[in-house]
Image 1 (tube, one colour):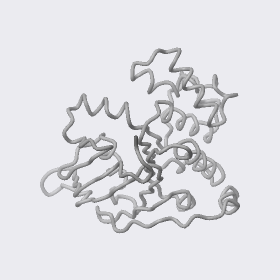
Image 2: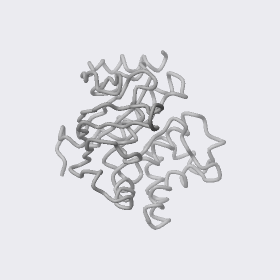
Image 3: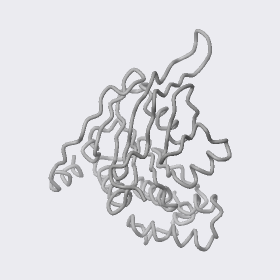
Length: 247
């Protein structure tokens, strides 16, 4: 069983580039970063600095050119493609900026997709998805299709989908970029509540949105393909967080 603050994600001298010859672009130039159970770590920095590439490497969606990535004690670079796919399905949930909901499915069916892919019984998968949608405040919208949902509601479905399979690691790529300040604050509070409070998940968030920095536990600043610094977030009072909703 994981202990609070146990290191769950570790990258060591991770390097990644794209292209060949004179057109090759070195995106990551030796990244060393740890993340822990029970924390939300924000990855911030200018466009093109390598944040999303790093997130994709950690999630096993890309392979590093050099270095190692360990998740929950497993060196994912040593896994076969099939083993890596199974590892992602078992341990990692994804929340993206664009929601990526299937338009012909209801909210409940969308939230059940990862469970169905994993081979879970349909009735049980829909039941788990419904429970998670209830947790994110969408019990009354379970049978609505994405076109009938607001942006904030679609993002909540995406969160429910990511968490329905109870992953140990949640990776979020710009989860508030297409949301207004009030909705973005609600989404971040929701992420903290359903993914961290009462359990020991690790949550990694790539963001440009400075309005949500205070929701994290630590901020890793990425620049020129490296981690420039990692700093703790000074926690505001609860009433200060509430003020973000009107920012």
